[in-house]
Amino acid sequence: MSTEQSKVNITITESAQGYLAELLSKQEDVMGIRVFITQPGTPKAETCIAYAREGDLKDADEVVDYPQFKAYFEGRSVPFLDEAFIDYAKDRMGGQLTIKAPNARLPKISADSPLEDQVNYVLYNEVNPSLAAHGGEVSLQELTEDNYAILKFGGGCQGCGMVDVTLKEGVEKTLIEKVPGLAGVKDVTDHSNTENAYIK
Image (cartoon, one colour):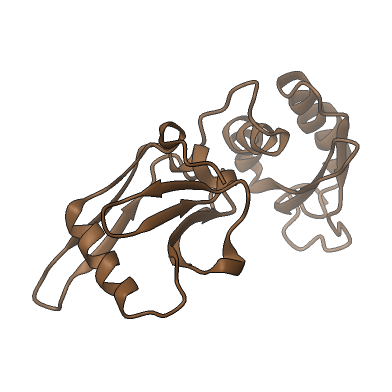
């Protein structure tokens, strides 16, 4: 685990630190908090804070020492947590912890970013806006060991008679051009359901 603070660009306000420290003091066998993002770099990204226990920690985690606790930031999530802000505001009902992570859904991509992040960035910023005109969308399901992007089409693209053309001439061409190192794309969508198809 790295204790290099420079990679983690996140603000946890003093009030949030106090609130989290209070929560931690009521728990046994916790080592601190763990901050991570589920489905980072996609519109479904969710920023989460959980108790960090021994079995939860990973070698790639970035560790930051705060005055009253340690915070473990999931290595995979660190680029997406850039400029994140965690605050706690007291109110009549007790108070509320808020997390703002402006880069959780749209990461800052560079040539060094993981292939998965680069593919998601192109899908959500270039491919999906043009598919949206037909009520369609495409998402990355997985990246194979031989660098093929396994894609799933939805909305008006599912069951569409033109999906092969869209896949090969549009999506694959764009991804290979924009993401060096990507071998190609494969479609895992069940196109037998033509209910929402743009072209049947």
